[in-house]
Length: 310
Image (tube, rainbow, N blue to C red; front, side, top):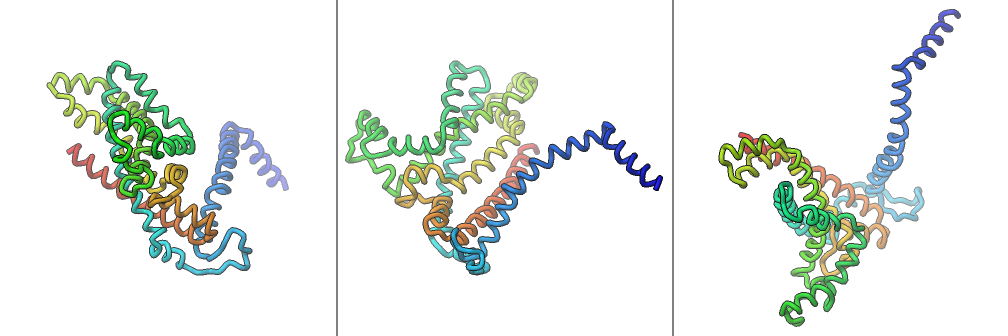
């Protein structure tokens, strides 16, 4: 009996100690975020994976859902409107690479003394602060026949008859949407690159200047290796973001005239056709594709920068 009282006293005294109070505080701070993470992330994801094996609608009762196994996944690869929509991601990937090259170029210039540099940074970063839906409506009118872009080109000497329909012509409409995406995210990547470049030790530039290195050599041998982490991160985020493009094609064209990206088609299948199982399978397939692309990009950049270092 005395032993049990002593054990309780020891346990009680432990939680009053500094270490006990630290553990208790850490536990309390961890419980809430972990609970929110499980409830709003992991549990919905598990439910989505489970739905992907059923043929069902949102309103279908649990006992009426039809288990179809991997049929939904097979349909994702068979249907042109599902897996075929991923081909449009190639447009956005090309745009993302162009955007990163431009962002890195201007970031390198603006990281050093440049007249009007702060104003240019602010103007280029401003589009990123605008809501994506608002940008969609802005460019919807910008590209509409006879509106802003056509008017500007007409003032410059182009005739309306020779101008294409920027949102209807399937030879150019996806590039128009990609240009919108580049315009929006260019400033964000530029600011990230500027922050990384400005963190490079100034003594490296001084040593390079003493050795007679020119600007391209400084960029190749000092700047690029020093910011490889940010470059890798931006490329991974841009490529994975290209696979999940949604706002611009949904708001500007609503996926019409061959502009329906994977997310637009998935939204239509889930909320218009009410094929929840198929839409869930599409989401899981996209997640796996993004995961594989991320791993391949990491391996690629690891090899590239290793060769550069050697």
